[in-house]
Amino acid sequence: AKLDPSSASDKKVILMPCKNSPSRERVQLWLEARKQYESLQKGL
Amino acid sequence: MTTLTRQDLNFGQVVADILCEFLEVAIHLILYVREVYPSGIFQKRKKYNVPVQMSCHPELNQYIQDTLHCVKPLIEKNDAEKVAVVIMDKEHHPVERFVFEISQPPLLSISSDTLLSHVEQLLRAFILKISVCDAVLNNNPPDSTLRQQWSFSKCIHPIGQAWCSFTVLVHTRDAATRNMEKVQVIKDFPWIVADEQEVHMQEPRLIPLKTMTSDIVKMQLYVEERAQKT
Image (cartoon, rainbow over all chains, first blue to last red; front, top):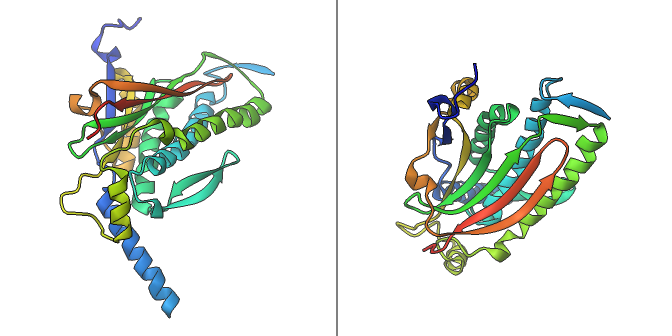
């Protein structure tokens, strides 16, 4: 049977992930920590 | 040259693999060029024989991979009409949308040359266009001069600062979402129908970036930019 284009199952939808992407602040903290770790490694 | 239908081999899978690999590179590059994340997390790599910037932040990389893992079954079945990388302000309203409009022909004429060389060349042109797109776009909030000041002062971020974030939107059909369900469960990465506030953009300015036509896929990339970003 052909789908009726107007049927609910053929309706166009726009989807997005439920989870948020990592925040810039969180990424910035990670970057600062990594820089500190790398400078400590160099100092050893 | 052989003519194949979508049912032959797992042709849809091949196209989905190629497109998802490309979209991964494109998303990393958009996030770098549009300064959604600090430039320090990006490293120079070579993809499609051109230099690109790829994030080395594990959580962000995983997020992008999980997103594309869920999008892949839709592309495989030719059910993803558009994939949009959306940059949003602090209120989660879109300020910029990089829209990849995808269409796949029902009949396919492919050869190894077509797949490897020609498509790669076409995708390279998209990457190059994304690399220079900041020249035609306005700055996203907060203003880039303020960003530089904070960067020099090594300030992590001012309290209450309004940095942008991003998400990925997929335009599909309701019936097609079944193709995603299994992957969503496996990856523990659920998807929801986007709210009006995440989709609607006030007075968008449309900037066409690149169009490609190949035997296996047609793709158009344009940017929708909000007139007032701040």
